[in-house]
Image (cartoon, rainbow, N blue to C red; front, side):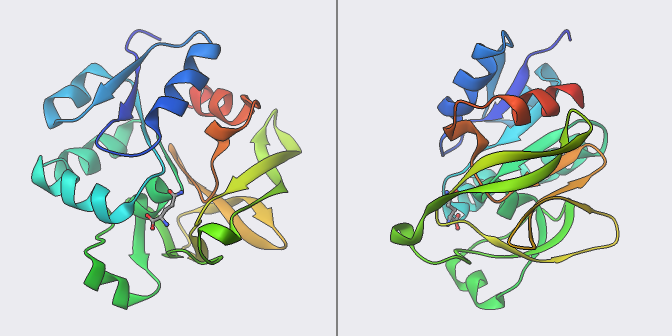
Length: 195
Ligand code: GLN
């Protein structure tokens, strides 16, 4: 791998992703403006606040460049990052809060679909992008979105209580939970394998 892995550093817990990649011996580079996408091999859109991410992304003119980048580079979104990657918000009224997803991943999400901060939880999920087999991963859900519909272009790769919690569409991976908040590096490694 020649170029570092990009982290969208507009807002959110990108530092945790940096630490995760560092523990795998992989260099990262913070992306805040369109031209910086040329310097990275892949991109992580971290968890945070999709309202703020929407505002900042549009302010710096990253919307179209991110869409172009996603056509031929791996992109992983976690929690708010997944919301930004999704194609539609299940509850249109959230538009009032100014969240406008990029529409790169064929799924529909409901923001805060499991409740409020106090309803955050950790649970084992069955995921099938690790080592080519179904494995268990301790997933941390923090004001997580719910994936309410998965389009025909995307595949469900992890489920919790029978509901999708991660989807993959070619080189795009969206997770409702936070793999950067555990000691387990397997999802970050699987993402690196997509580069
Ligand atoms: N609920 C947040 C949002 O709507 C996401 C929370 C998170 O990323 N942990 O953007």
